[in-house]
Every structure is written in structure tokens, then in C-alpha cells.
Image (cartoon, rainbow, N blue to C red; front, side):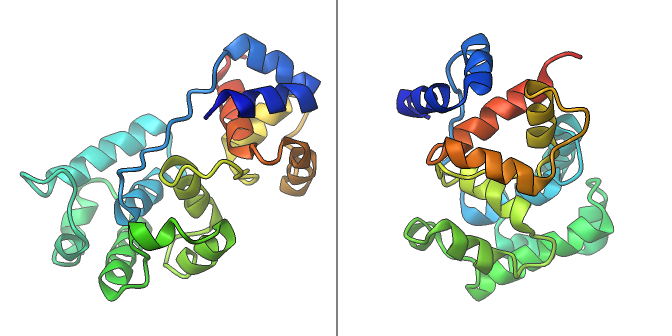
Amino acid sequence: MNQQAVDHLIRVDEVLARHIRRIGACELKPHRNRGVFRALVQAVTHQQLNGTAATTILKRFIALYPGKRFPTPEDVLATPDEKLRSAGLSRAKTAAIKDIAAKAVGGAIPVARTITRMDNEEIIARLTTIRGVGPWTVEMLLIFTLGRPDVLPVTDFGVRKGFARLYALKELPAPQDLLSHGERWRPHRSAAAWYLWRAADLPD
């Protein structure tokens, strides 16, 4: 994320500005070479888990396919559910990953060249038809794979926790309240979300 985003956030929000000066430069760097299929599988794996647990399961999942950096959709479809579950995937996540693979093979998931030309709303509408893929999962794709600069995942626990800490709230903000406050951060809400994640990680 460029300095322009940081400068804008400092200018429009004095509470966030103090946090930014404490944290320093925004280190949000999208993995643009990661395909849509892989990004969705990784996002589903991370659902409702901390980073360490999700990374462990993901490594076991990839290890089911020796010699490959990541399995193809066809590989996943050919793998029995029991084998996928042996990597630590829940029954629901196994079903979701199988559906992601089926949709990729069937052409419902846009290829990289196509998805880069679609706007955020189009992408969310298209991909949330997949089993187990909700708006949050697609928002992670938009931020961390496609590098979209203006995404605010208001249902994300870390974003809400970081906001509550910075703005001295006793409870997590309602998604609608966070969305309303975040209007001032446009068009750099992805960078704002990154700083809120950093706030959530600060020691109590």
C-alpha cells in the first residue's frame, strides 16, 4: 500500500493517525500471483481459526499432493473426503473446498485475467454462490490476492476488535457502525483494515 493511503488516513482520522504513527508504514502486500482457486481454498481453511492452526492444516492439505506447490481443482475432486479430513479439515470445510474445486472446473470461478476486470460487488455476488464462501471470504481475496485498495471487512473479528481498542469502546462495534465510521477512510479502507488488525494484535 502506498504512502498516499497512509497520508489520507492520517489526515481524515486523528485517532487512527496516532496509531499509524506508532505502528509505522503499512506492510500490506497482496499475493497477486496466487490464483483465485488457491486463494479461496486458503481463505476457507482460515475461517474461524487462528493463523497458526490454519497454517498447520493448510500444510497438511498441500502435503496430500506430493511434488505440487498446490493441488489443482481436478486433484481435489479426485481426493476422497476422508483423506481431506485427515489433514484436519472439518466436514463443512471439506464440502466447501470440494465445491470450490467443482465451480473452478465448471467455469463459475473467473480466471485471473477475467476477475481483474470485475468490480468488487460483481466478484462478491459471483463467488458467494459457492458453498461455504461468504462475503468475508471474498473480502480476504479482494484484499490479499487482488490487492483492491478500498475493502473494509466489517464482520471480521480482528477489525472490530482493533477498532474497539483504538476508539476505547467497551464492546465490539456493530458492523453498520464500523461501516459508517469507515466512510471517511475511502478510498483506502484496505489500509485502514490492516492498521485495525495491528491494533487487535497489541498486548492488553
